[in-house]
Length: 355
Image (tube, helix red, strand yellow):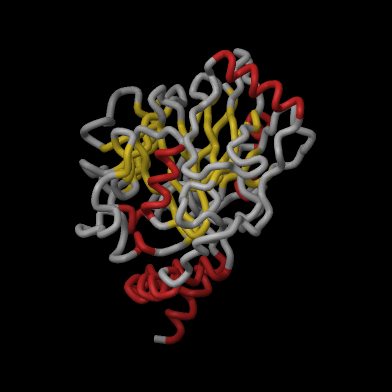
């Protein structure tokens, strides 16, 4: 018995693709019948990590936009093209809610804007990082990891292709492990799991345009569909948080009480014009995440992955108005390196590339 178990665990530790020893160990335990144990430990620990109810953020924050970046933002505001943001806390801190523009596509459209804000008046130390992408300037792609979703050979090599890195605006984490997501994964005619009616779904068509919504109601399979990633159920619908998030009575949003954990969480939404919105932050509950997506302008939104090593959003092309040249993390407090997706990764992720 010990030899097969040891071989299995050793295989998990050496499986190709970026992942820490702790992540590999937890995934191995889950895959060998230990999901209930892992979930119980996580709930016990993270439900006791409620952040302070007063004060200000203590960790490092993204830099304040430069004068040159401020000029670009003012021009976008005058033109009516700046994304909307309605933070719940006022007055704002220096740099809070101030947009940093990203690169400009060939059509002259600024591809991305980033900022940070505090979404929860009851917990003012919580910080949400926000990445807004202009659908006219970027194309999105779903990239399969070396291990997840698994099942077969997928397009690409589980990393941002070297030939595309000079045009890559951003890359960020996808959803739960497929066995825990309550849905399926589809790409280029192949699939793992079954696409479930009612599941929250990211849909990428063959032009790189993205749509997001409830499968069978807002989005469905069409001849132009290239990729679909499902994860749980919508947490924002019709521009407001979905009812029932606190109780999660039917486990629509993960295992029992997972919605109450104060932990790193990430989510993806779409605004009224169809532009993707990525939000992430630490010490978030599911309700906090839904509130942050709503304040960022999402009309529909879904949770992606959770916990410290899983939540990653990296900015690659920072634009000509930014003096930094190497990739940076959306929030400096994110744990994984800023070039995470420049090497093969075990988990699937999403990229945004200049058109």
